[in-house]
Image 1 (cartoon, rainbow, N blue to C red):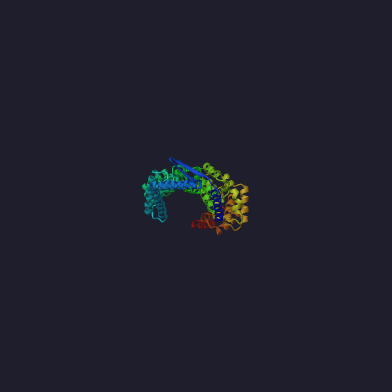
Image 2 (image 1 turned 90 degrees about the vertical axis):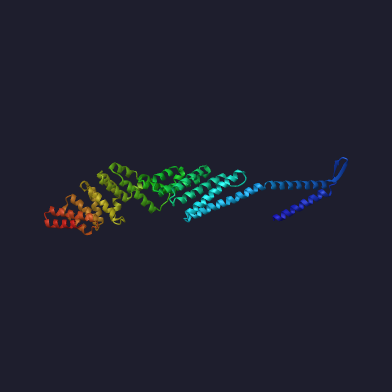
Length: 429
């Protein structure tokens, strides 16, 4: 279709030219004393067009002749630029393949080519399309590849030298992304060397947006755990869980582990309470954290009533007949309650009795109910429950305490033979 339009346009121009030139009787007279030259107007037009074409062709030829040196420099610059990018790609391929010495040589070759290309570009602004921003980025990446290859070889002097060069090359604003990448790699190298403090300092130098990326948060979590900065590590783990950097189960496990560590680091009841209330509401609802916090509070000789209030929020979930929580958690909870049996109020006694009736075959609950009855001087019921508990208890410590309690009960009713047998059973455990 386009060719048809061009053909129609050509015919139109030809027809217009024929109409204009065929009936044109104009004459152009050129006076060149003592001569007079008369030529037709059509011939004059053709002569002028031919002269213009001749002059235009001559100017183009002269321009091409004088631009030959510039074209030669441009061609050499293009060849060097292609070789430079090829060397950079070779360095990356060798680095990924684990050939670190070859990667270093290729990256250094790329740097040498980039330097020579910069010298060529200084001779003329139009020699190469290699802009200043691309030059800074490529130089920074080449230095980074050398440093990255020097890290596995434990050549720290070479690594640090090219790291500083990479940071200097990525200093302009147009190389901000490259600079952030260099800082990320430097932080990771610091972590690999075991210098978590230096890694945190490098991460602190990142812009606010980059510091909240998943990569930065992962390294910050690792560094905080190495330095045992549990509170900071816990906050970082929460952010990672919010960004879905882990699966829900893994995120819950990491947060729970850090929270347990935070509670375990408390050295007095006041510090433990501050650590407990620094946790999120969802974390304070985890049975493992509640039981651990209550056990830690009892170990620090803290407020027994506060420990029971913490346990009360998970009591029904832990003691439910179809609860899937493990026996180890129930044993730990029983230990916390057993430590404060002397001050146990009737409400808690009722809860313990109801839990034991709801799980009549649970030896752990039989032991707790028996010890509670013993603290209330209900000797008969205590003896019955503890005797049943000794048949099913799997925990050695609880079973030993049950036999010791039975021995005390036997002594209380003046049965030395039963007391001796109970002490013997306790000693064998």
